[in-house]
Each structure stands twice: as C-alpha cells, then as structure tokens.
Amino acid sequence: MKFYTIGFALSLLLTMAAFLFIQIHFIIICAILQIFVQLFFFLHVGRKEKPRWNLTVLVFACIIVGILVGGTLWIMGNVQHNTMPQNTYLND
Amino acid sequence: MKEESDKVTFGFWLYIMSDCVLFAALFAAYAVLNGQTYGGFTLQDIASLPYVLVETLLLLTSSFTVGLALLAAHYNKKQLTLLALAATLVLGLSFLGMELSEFSHLIAQGHSWRQSAFLTSFFTLVGTHGLHVLLGSVWMLVLTAHIVIRGLTVGSIRKLLCLSLFWHFLDIVWVCIFTFVYLWSAL
Image (cartoon, rainbow over all chains, first blue to last red; front, top):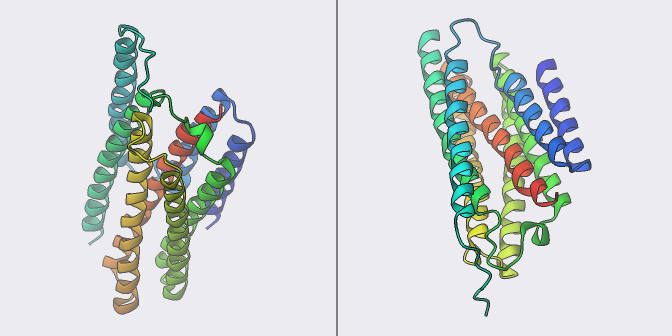
C-alpha cells in the first residue's frame, strides 16, 4: 500500500511539473524519471529475487526500441536532407 | 502451482515487451511524419493541454487503483478487490470517453486522419493506445465477473496480476504520448 502510494505521489508530481514547465530538456527528464518510477513502484521491476528474467527481457526490449526509433530518425533525417525542398502545396 | 504462476506471468511479460516494440514503431513513424502537415494545422493549433492533463490524471489514478486491487487480492479481501477494480474500470472508461470526444471533435472540425500524413500518424498512435485501453476494460469486466462468481482463487489472482501489468504498461505508454506528442507540440 505504502509502496503504491509513494509511486502514485511521485508520478503525480512529475506529471504536474512537466505540464507546468514545458521545456524540451525538462519534459524529457520528467518522462524518463516517471517511466523509472512506474517500472519500480507499479511493475516491481528489480524487486524480485534472482534470476531476474523480467529485467533481462526488459533491457533487451529497450535495446530493440532504441535501434528502431533511433535508426528510423537517423535514416529518415538523411532522406529528408537529400530530398529537394517542395513548397508547392496542393491546397484547394 | 507457484512455478506455474511465475511461468504465466513471465509469458505475459514477454507479450508486453513485444507490444512495447509495436508502440516504438508507431512513435518512430509519428516522429518522422511530425512536420508533414501538408500545409494544414499542427497539433498546437488543435489540441488543448488542460484537457490532456485531465486525461493523464484519470489514467494515472486508474493505474494506482488497479495496484490497490492486486494488493487487496493478495490479502484475500474480495469486496475491496472488486471495489478497486470497479473504480479502475470507471476511470479507464472516462479516459476512453474523453479521448473519443476529442477525436470526434477533431474530425468534426475537418482534422481527420485523411487530412495529412501527420494526422494519420497521430490518430494511429493515440488510437492504438485507446484500443489497448478498450481491450483492457473488456478484460477487466470479464475478470470482475469471474471474481464475483468464483471468488479469489489462485487462477483469478494470476489473471489480475497479468491485467495489472498490462494496465501499468498502458500508463507508461501514455506518459510517452503526453510528453512526446502533446507537450512536444507546445514547445
């Protein structure tokens, strides 16, 4: 009970903070902190006895997510860079 | 029995991680198409942040109450479990209602997914999350009936554990959505 309440309070705090101070670095830090808070307090990651298969799979998934998102942005950024700018919108 | 439960939970955890990869693909598509508004409106013009804040608080509170339901089930308190589950369901459905009303509002104003690549990716990303919340709500309804009829058996507690994992995961995805979709547009 206490554990969930702490997690809930921290999440609320981080959410409100992100909505009050909308600055690029600040909201990213808030999001990352909130993900860790919820993983630890709600999903109980890292609080189980060994061997920690859940954690292993989570780390693997994070690597895949990193490759997927990072790779996409990298490649598509380059594609956009190499494309001629088009300013003719077909607005009707 | 304990080992069996652990296996089921781990299998479900694997499913959640694969779902995570699905959402990552949608986020990547959204990030790429963010600027492709086809001369139309950006999210900043059409989204209301206070509205999103209320949605966020609803989902966050429902994540808390589903945790309480699991806790009550571990202490074998049936009434309390059902009460917490009902609260979660109400909060989840209110979130869904708010999201649907936001969508229908956007479409009524002519900002549907057919407008631009950006809006397509926006509706796909946020809509997929909404679909997960809907499926989670249906699951919760079935589980509530299960607990009412059969009581808090080992099986129903295991199902509740899987559901709570799923629900917390949806909350984490929503954290990413409100940060990288809604707040990002207000930068």
